[in-house]
View (cartoon, helix red, strand yellow):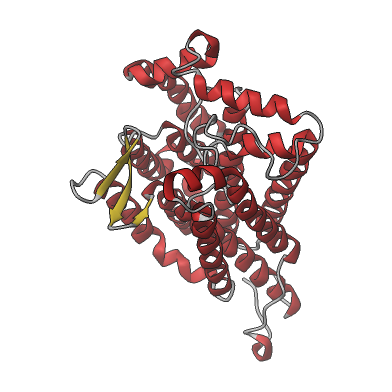
Length: 380
């Protein structure tokens, strides 16, 4: 049990400023990229080239406010929010299917909307699951050594995945599933338990693909997009055109050709294609160097935690960011079947931006507390 000097009980360190700076830099760069990728579509659809830019800027400012507020919290008090966070996530996901509340677009019902205000519950549910899992395992770390002890986390994760899949949103389902397995692994579960989880999942994936015709069509388009160049294969082909047109150094910022209504969702799910076209291989390499740096510093903060709850909390948030970034890059480059998933902190979408920045603010908060404990002379 640690002890602190009573005269410095409220001391806090500066935290990992490199991590915070990298997060803010990526989010600010995302605002610029959203403008570049959306200006033409915004002008055509809304008569305002800055429509998506202004929304993203508002989300960025709200995210800054969230980081500023969360940075001064005592993150250990969030333990009591574990179960409420899970319940809230499930309720919000269920509300998507309530007539009048749920908003549909392109055949999917993924949003809750009141007037012009909309939120995407699946983005909130990812972090709600992380809060629950961190609380559950920190309460009794020995649960990780028993398969029965892992079952409540599996139940929570599967429940969230089922609701998200019904929207349908296979990409976020994959993200939550990967975070679930990743947190169990990082927590130190036995290999037998991991095998008992992963093997059924591997068999379930092809079943889920075959269960829905549109998923099978996307798989066919992934294998050979030129077989349906004007239908299922269209988006991937246009994305590959953008990637190829970027070459080594790109066409120049704001000079993408594919954003002129050739590439669907150029400001959101496929914004990386526009970035690649405008900045080339070098620009994408630097972008993922920054993303990789955030992931590295996040896991470094987790490893420095002297309490299991902080370790699991930071690991889960960092893992969610890393998995989503990797999946988006794999989709855009045609390495996995196309599915809608934003590039975190970069793609247009206020719910994703604000929630992700809040999550990163929580990681920074933990780094401040850990540094503060060392500053005031914590002893084991």
